[in-house]
Image (cartoon, rainbow over the protein chains, first blue to last red):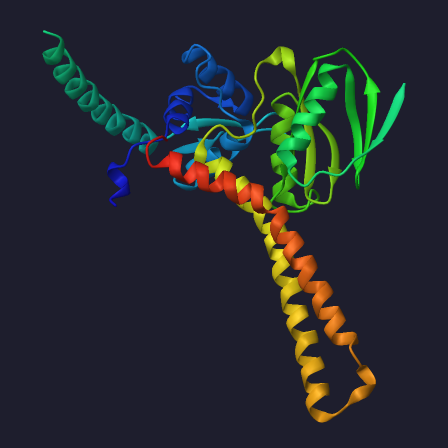
Length: 107
Length: 185
């Protein structure tokens, strides 16, 4: 499977969106919960694993120059933004086709 | 007032459910060691409890990073026992699940299953060794060992079977998640 065109998980998609501004882990969870009207509640274990994978892929970076004892903050990179853009194209296609077919059905 | 309850669980999710039931009644877990739970009285329903098996020992750098991350997320670390951690979060802060997608939930089930099935494999291997010692002794007419190695082999094999059956609920949950994953994220 060509993973460059694979769907992002809901969690990763919302994590990336949350990091268009710098946030620490807890703030990411709160933001996702607020964005989705409490529908998506990211588990801290899931978030921790996803952040490490995204750091490795360089889709996000941790903010430099942080003093000890302060919560670690992250932000999205240009590469991460490109992944979000590509996902938006994919999602638009899904919605367009879905609406097209279900609306034709209801006429 | 403190209350000590001795109890054994082999399915950590049932253990979680029990701890949350106790918390709902106002008995909050404050410490755990081998089959020994310490509770303190508190506000009923104030906390949600979760149990996790860490990938490494709690003192390992990777575990420390993770536990620090949890604490920054408003989670209390109640107790450690080997690689198990007992966690809680204020119920007022919203729902508390450590894992929210199938992939990370499966990774955790696999880790728990391997804890038991890995130990079972070790038992079986030692049982095989004992069996071969007994057979060799039998063939060479070396009678002074008697049936001791055979007895040890049977005991170890029985222990292995027990350990395998302890992992069964995890394997069942894994199968179910795998099936779900072919249609859901």
